Image (spheres, helix red, strand yellow):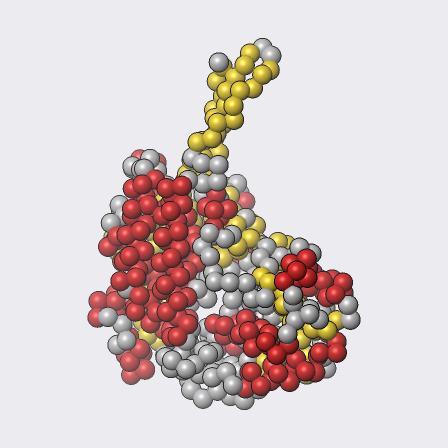
Length: 503
């Protein structure tokens, strides 16, 4: 272990530091197990140092965890437990996560490179809030309720009554992305547990440590063995999980290419699939907007977490006559954003997840510039330090159909696109294969009207408001299938049963 990695782990509580150093990457039926000889290094994006080496699950670990989840669902008492009991345990889990908030915030820096000032909310407070939300959802029941009467049906040869019963779907394979590992797990595991499902969680192999601590928290919260299980590894482990006959629902967050593979792999078993994928979301500035007020929040919307967010609004659309003024203001804003050490409270933009990913993001910019694009704001200057840092950039002189305008970069890079009419702006906003998110700046009445015309699962007006766990996060087009989060997302974890009887 290098001095850098030792220094980072020293920021954790001793018990959690020991967990990160020693825990195998398989948690099955309430026990930690080493189920393969394969390992993966946990590399800190902020330093480039290896902080831990985790023994991954292999296909044997997948078989064991799925069998445990299947047995617990089919033979145990979890699926038939009361909503009140499930809610009690979920609230207990939220409380345990809050008790470990400092550790989760530190792991957000170590695993993801999120600046500590941001990590406290994204990687600790927000996940706890989602588990509390799903505790409430368990008590309320899904939309329509656990039971719903359809009333009398008058039809020959008799009258009948019908009831609908919403029952837990079964074993859930929950596969999360690297950018918000605990938060995404809270969407998926929280909904599954609230419904009465059992689960196998598979985090990204690039960010494992928060999931190790989550399993410890699940133990502390008092969940029965086998209700939540953990596997770790690469594509072979993911494929074994999505193809397993013991899985009823696969819920995945990640890239479009991997999402397509997940869908193919689940197809032979006719499993239900929920996919939350990528985006290339518009940030539409109407002529009625206050230019001085909207540039800084617009920049922050595509640089948060070093731009590693599927909902980042990376395509900014401005009236043509505002183009130069917007670029000048963006240059001022971006030059003042501190980039670097994610442990520094003043840092706004931390590192990207890995050196190959940084090279990938930079490759998009290089190809755009070679084709005639211009860097309007930001700098190619190297950021001091051994981590995977990249200064934010705003690129102009490109069309909406250019590669850099259409592909999800997952980095702190935005494009600036001019328009000549609001109708043209809407057409540009919708000219993408994605449809995840969008934002509109302008007078509220005009922006709300335009919001109805933008093809995206979520549209905010003038920045929207605080994240709300009860709101869904749907995607249109290649941004996904099904829904994460909120009561609509909770509904994904149920099957519907129709019972009809004569009266």
